[in-house]
Length: 167
Image 1: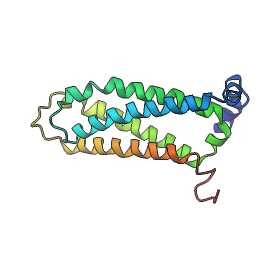
Image 2: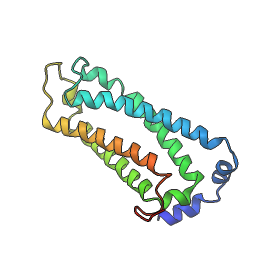
Image 3: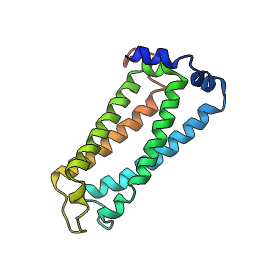
Image 4: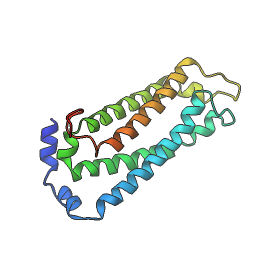
């Protein structure tokens, strides 16, 4: 399946435009970094409060950051797709990129679990509410997963096709 995606992308008009325009990759990097700042900055506040820290913020106030987090994720999604279009062969064969995609999927499942099990309850919390263990696990899992996603993103250019391949 990955090979057919690479075949579809490699040599496409969008791929050729990205490769030919010297300035486009730095623009994608800036957009990706800005999106990452919005995503992780907002999640840091939300998850720390969910775990029971930052009690000066109400959960409702921290959840006002969700549109910022979603905007950051959308910027990262779009710029990430364009990165893939710019060099599909390198990304598709990169073990760290594949790990990053798996971690994003797990972070999404963690967010869905939060939404289905805790969201309504959290919005009723006061400053004195002690978060249940489930909320703490979800919050710390989110922080760890997104930190690992960020680390993998930074390692993609430096680690080749297979981990430990000596590239």
